[in-house]
Length: 188
Image 1 (cartoon, rainbow, N blue to C red):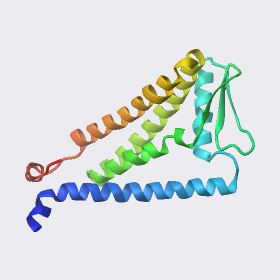
Image 2 (cartoon, helix red, strand yellow; image 1 turned 180 degrees about the vertical axis):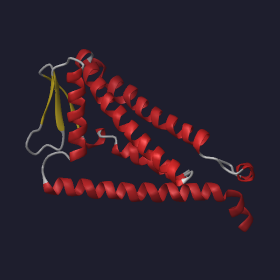
Image 3 (tube, rainbow, N blue to C red; image 1 turned 30 degrees about the vertical axis):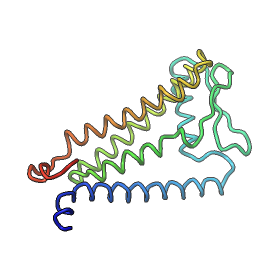
Image 4 (cartoon, one colour; image 1 turned 90 degrees about the vertical axis):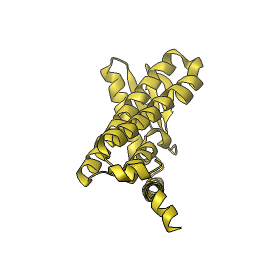
């Protein structure tokens, strides 16, 4: 059994660390959402900010956009040229994607400084790309409403998850240095 553990210790450490970080961060986020729902019947602060920043970005690019809140709704309505286009819900704010990204990075940690800097840079990049994603979804749905499933259900999730995967590959290949002997013994 000790030999088996020795052979797969990096894999076991990765899985345990990933699951622990993911569980703790997801539980913390759930508590945040529960607190947000009990204190107001409006969407949580992060979701509202994502919608607001998407609106601001659309306005910068010359579109007339606005957001609106309705009493009792947990989402933000986004209008483009006075046409109701999308509702930005909690799942659109990219927090769960950032949690997934961070759990992987911590599970494959490098030095403390590199890990923290990459977590910050990656989290900010994912957030910014998500705001761009919502703005582009709005424009695409304004012009091509019949393609909603393709635009919202396929293309844009592929972009955000593809970017997270690319960030993981960059992290593993350029920032995490396993000792040569450990790398030879590891199956990851």
